[in-house]
Length: 156
Image (cartoon, rainbow, N blue to C red; front, top):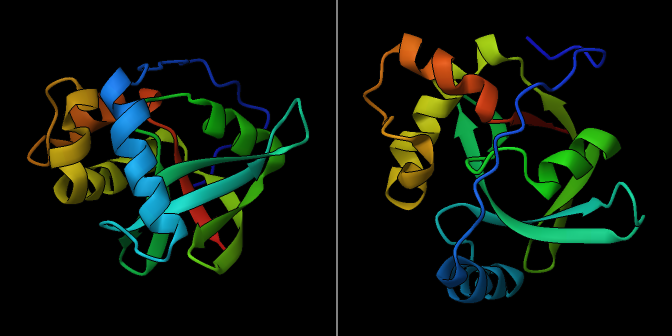
């Protein structure tokens, strides 16, 4: 189920990244990804800024669940989330390979299986942002936190 464009995004949860993440971890993963080495599914997300009109980049984890691909924002309503919502599309890059896509935001009721799969694959990296929730959480627990975790289906 996709979120209706007229529905307001009432939850603006955002977890600010720490110094190590910004200056060491993300830079290292971005460099590797730009040079063609995807780290555990990493991609460089390229999206047009909603205010500047310039291409903005950040490293994201591309998740595959039963043949569908998703982007999850574990930190909440980040700048890339705001830009994707405004643009409705972006590009995913690994090395020289650039893949354009259309972003379809999921409504909260559809997020639980995607959030569970995301935690199963990358809980070691992003678990700290899920406030005590892990891959073994109940559907009810995942439904409770869903509004704070934007999820987008990546479509061709």
